[in-house]
Length: 328
Image 1 (spheres, rainbow, N blue to C red):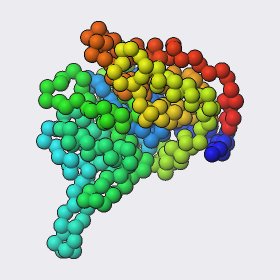
Image 2: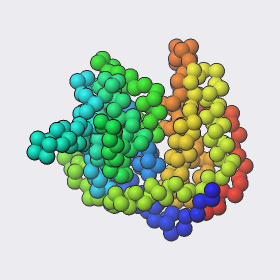
Image 3: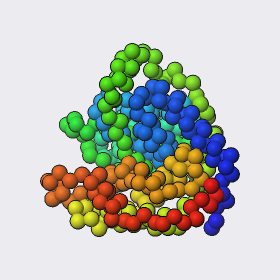
Image 4: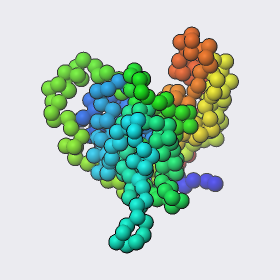
């Protein structure tokens, strides 16, 4: 089925709004333009973000800033060992006055949900997010309840302090479009943070756009042109991880879909209505790394997923330029 090409003015409009969002978010998340760009890529690709980093580097601030910049509703869930699935999704309660059951939505019903320290909750509670992240709805007592659109889950976890935590299972990790690390700021950026720490609150951000416009941008990302050789290129990149001698489980077909969706949004952010091989190369780390399970021997020898992905990129030939500018 052919997709109607995006008009050039729509592509430019998308890139302009995305740049304005990145600039606005960058006023509170200082010195991390690529992290902001990748988070917005996930947002426009209808994906979710896992932020793994030490405390205090701005993980929650990034999520709150995205919500403020798009005039969206956000909720924060502090994951703890005693958190119940109903504390996340909501619960049905009997109303004495109406003599009927009423659904009371949980904090997951928002445009942006911050799942803080997600690995501190039990696996049962973590699994409460599985359906809503994939289907964008919550089923309680057999009744589905759709969440607001657009919808983004930004989960955080601390990779250093592991006491009392539950490792996210592969099925849960696979629901995240990208896994990012904010990292420590550069010296000059940290000095700038200290100078204006009281002024760098996401709550003070003026919105750039609204959720209706973001919804339109999400639909635009579905119409980005991807040439047939690039679909093959994406599949071969994933296959290279599956065949790698140091990998126990490679990237799944869901991961390949995630890469193409992310590349479509990434292309529009860069002002293009078509995907290039360079888009896949830029995104393969954030999209694929958390989906690669290394063999025990590779882990003992200190091999990283990033090294495996570098091997995959080198081993798969880049497709020759085709009719990639169709619809540009």
